[in-house]
Length: 297
Image (cartoon, rainbow, N blue to C red):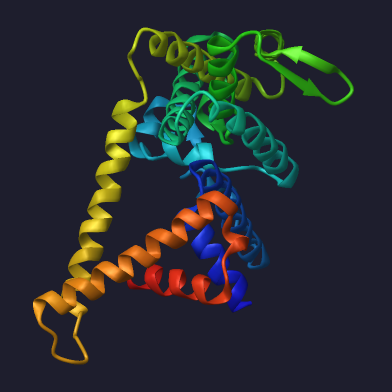
């Protein structure tokens, strides 16, 4: 069990952005389900607390829960919902990385989710058809983010061919067009909110690819914010290491610097090995050394 947890931690820490997005969605699903099961055992309604992390259709509710415009895109209703979305995220995320960077994948995931949430909010507060349910409607799921990735791919490389089960080969432009058309035709159906979110994500994906061709990366502001948080965490980790470091023996500055440089060189070598051959190619001692290093951060 400890070996599995150690491998999981190392994979999460050193895996790709796509891997981290998948793990984050799956992890949140498990945590939410465990909380829901616990509450139900005590006859406590789960809808009330879930509404605090889902995206509300009401402007007034959103003002009191602004974080929900981010949290909703990592939530899933049931196992099938999670499985289908993660399958699509994996497939199209891998394709996306053939054209763009890992940072841009994360940035577009978040930006697409926000675009989907905003169109959903606008639609439910604009069309009389939704007037009676606007105060009780909520949105969750990664579909808008995935739609942004799909449409960005179709706009960047419209003739890129993918192979679908039971359908065969199809160009990305046709696949994206059919997917968008289905959402347009379903905006008055049982999943109307989800369909509007799909369209919002699709619009963001198109705008992202369009402006990228002109040299402007719409995900840059999102990635700058993410980098700021990451750098803040690294800075705090460095402070903790500096405060807690107590050498067992007295060393000169030159000896200490030489030892530290050698340790960093060994870690870099292990990370390079992971990039080239994968985590499973590491020896037991290399895995342990990498884990010990991650625990010290």
